[in-house]
Image 1 (cartoon, helix red, strand yellow):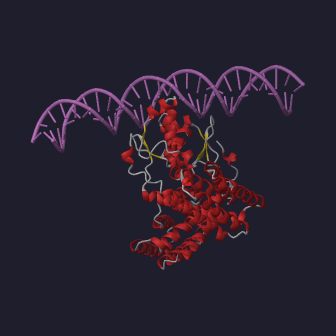
Image 2 (cartoon, chains in turn purple, yellow, blue, green; image 1 turned 30 degrees about the vertical axis):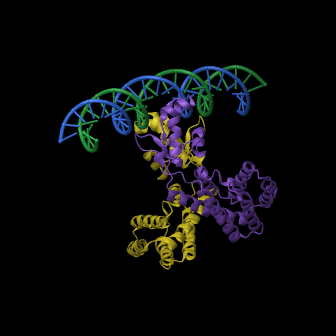
Image 3 (cartoon, chains in turn green, red, orange, purple; image 1 turned 60 degrees about the horizontal axis):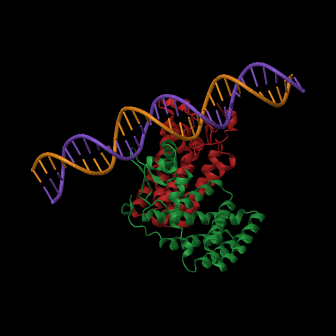
Length: 211
Length: 211
DNA sequence: TGTCCGAAAAGTGCATGCAATTTCATCTTA
DNA sequence: TAAGATGAAATTGCATGCACTTTTCGGACA
């Protein structure tokens, strides 16, 4: 299950590609049963589309739906940032700031991979800081579905430094418990990522990439 | 699958209750396989909790998690109201207002059931008016998970009129394209529903209700 | 009497087989 | 040549069986 999800999220499977049960079963050397169950789960998560008596296909994200996900992401991150500014404990605030400052090293070194890991942690800290488990779930799931479209964002020249600067704005707002400012900073940060990712979201029509 | 989901959403299955595959299979006169797959799906949707080699159980919603869902609901509805104020077409606005005014009749008649249907439609219109499919999905799913806790909200005396009045505030803000006001009105509306529902959310410890 | 241990019962995880549906290639016909 | 019909191959949906894990219940022992 995790393995199939990863194949989709990491982009090894392209949108529109068929996921037939026997091939997957052979691939992972299990029977069809666990594969079927995994596909059901992925269907419920929105990663694959399923229709009765039809093979599951990797969900084709239309341009407009992709846009709606990025917009939703921006709204959710804004909420998390606002609530974090209002609710984070002293410990959470301190850690957020420390980790942020520590990441400056990665920016100077141009360590894209490592910064990407740090970036994920940074955002996760924001989600947790909101102290709302349901929002945490929604934002996590949305993030997972956006992952394939955001993969190479830090390859764009100057993106690392820009990201760091935007994170800084969010951190500052949270430190002074300014929810409004934190929300605004987070919203525009995601907008930037959205724009940066749009460059890579030129996957064309899914049918053209089919098996 | 739908049948099992309904049993949970309509409250025939209480939180913490075990859903063992053989019983369910016998109940619906199918084999374990489709039951298993349905349970996986419900698990992904958050309606049941699953652990390896353990029976699925109806998700126990803790007090704090329930609160987090209502808070998330308020945030989501606020977003939808704001976006609706900004984006609804003339037609959508007109329909929203007309349907709202038509529902006054139900309030005066004290038609709880009918008003409940109207209420669902009203909110759905708001979700659609935001013109964002992903937010629509999230809010729909959250609403489904809250359904068991909101069932009897209109039984509280005076709740119908209050709901109508709050809807009116949202409609007015949307008609003048005032996103901020619409968001505020929607947020406090859901807060009211949350309070009203809290009365019914006294389901006690789940283990006490087990099979 | 209470606790610990072990065996039986119950339940889940997965493999396999068969029926039903879809898909695809080939042949027919206008 | 193109469109439609037809049958075989491929694929999904579901049932069943077996291995392994968890749970339960009875008895031994302190």
